[in-house]
Image 1: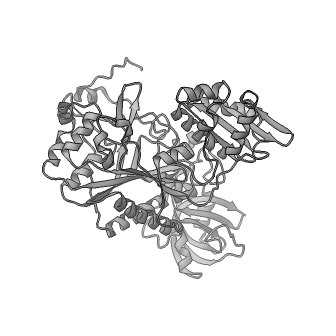
Image 2 (image 1 turned 180 degrees about the vertical axis):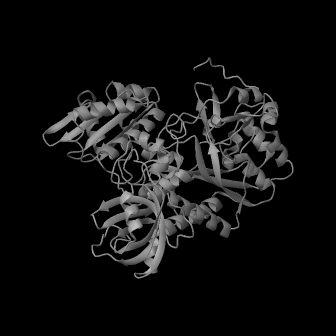
Image 3 (image 1 turned 60 degrees about the vertical axis):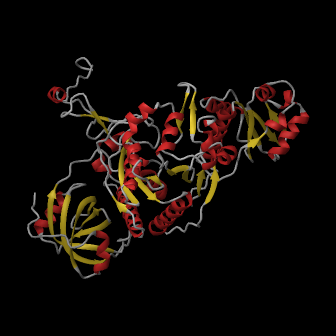
Amino acid sequence: MDQMGTLRRTHYNIRSLDAGTGTEIVVAGFISRIRDMGNLIFCDLRDYTGILQLVFDDSCDRKDFDKAKRLSSESVVMAKGVLRERSSKNPELPTGGIELVVNELRVLSLGATPPFEIRDSVPVREELALKYRYLDLRRPSLNNSIVARHRIVKVTRDYFDANQFVEIETPMLIRSTPEGARDYIVPSRVHPGKFYALPQSPQLYKQLLMVGGFDRYFQIARCFRDEDLRANRQPEFTQIDIEMAFSDIDDIISMNEGFISRIFGEILNFNIGLPLRRMTYAEAMARFGSDKPDTRFGMELIELTEVLDGCPEGIFLDVIKSGGSVKAINAKGLADKLTRKETDRLTEFIKTFGAKGLSFARLLPDGNSSNYEKSLGEAFSAKVRDICGAQENDAILIVAGDTEVVLESLGALRLEIAGKFSLIPEDGFEMLWITHFPLFEYSKEDGRYYAKHHPFTAPLDEDIPHLESDPASCRAKAYDLVINGTETGGGSIRISDSTLQRRMFRALGFTDEQAQSEFGFLLDAYSFGAPPHGGIAFGLDRLVMLMLGKKSIRDVIAFPKVQSASELMTESPSIVDARQLTELSLKTGLSDGE
């Protein structure tokens, strides 16, 4: 192999356009493709900015020409030469009008045959791509995504710096506290039997920074949650974390609308009309069956409970008498596509959300096909068609049952149908704020209330008197930013009064002693004076994914984990040496070989 010696890169591939033909430059990168035509060799050189064609011809030194003959795909080289205009241009490449006639070649590393072809046009099984992630990262689309992520972070820092925010790092080894997802815990060697936790977010620290007088804080924060993974979740993720003192909901929303407008404008040249629309949680659930509604298409939920009150005996009346709900969606123009086989599939789909079944009516040109109209009767069936605005070739889909189940089932059904039948526009962005979330959510399994957001979220002022007497009615000073049906950021105004914070803990089932034991440091801090404050955190991975039009956050993370929370490339997690466990006063509880 050659050494770099005194040869140094002068240009990245994309910057060779600035040099102009006739200029001698030095480039470096990976050999992407080789076309050996005997006395003429063409090589595509790839660096992170793009592709540049190298040419080896009769003017090349014979030793360098022979080196080019021996090149393999993915070899690492440096090449010195003169730029010239290509006789056969490639309009698909930014540099497709020029090429480098090489007069000096250094082969720094010969590439072994990769397990897959490193080209965007060649599909690769995800498990294989993740096992060889360092090769996968060479693909232009993934490489470009990581670079774009960097630029988004840079604009983020510039924006908040310009608005008097201070970037402050908070600890990674913290105290484990209740009321969140499951922590990743870290044993302490110095304090046997005691553990740190990795932060699920910097929540308490950023609030304490407000108490500390920093006024405006932000951080590109690494966070960890040991929970069962599903699509677009990772055990470790990144937040754009923000906190502001002396602020209310409008202050925080206005500041962050400016941020979103800035990054979409600078990165995508996409103009966002401000202010963004706001919708209460109650309205979002009633209209879309979701607190993160995708408003790029219609098919909104339709309330039928009152219309069907007094209908003939049957499932609808039974549900209404038991205090449940009956709601529908109108799948306009899809009656011929929602065949009996398809409605059977959709029935099984909504059962996964707790629904008992799916009632439907397809308004076909040769007559209606329905599984409920005969028992419901023509008068009530006509009322349903009327309130749904149903016309020929529309399909009415109805779910009846517990209100929460009905909302979740129809919300999911709406998305399922829209996805399958391509009803969702793929270009552009629909953004809105969801506000006035419930302060609590009740767990039937545990027989107690949990904080919907977290225990430090402030209730609406008018709901404070009901904290203990009617927690289910209390609403939060909380807000989420939803982009194209994906929750991208969420935050709240915090409780900044120790008396109100203690009341909140009591409503969550904490005794005063438990609250002091778990959160005494926060309550003590408030006793020294705490400014009103609030904040928000954006999921950076989700934000980048949405902006770049990717299908998964794994496409914008350099080294992601799979659904089992393992990393295939380094085979992490792994077994550690018994000596390490002894030093940490730990036993695994597993027998040999497990």
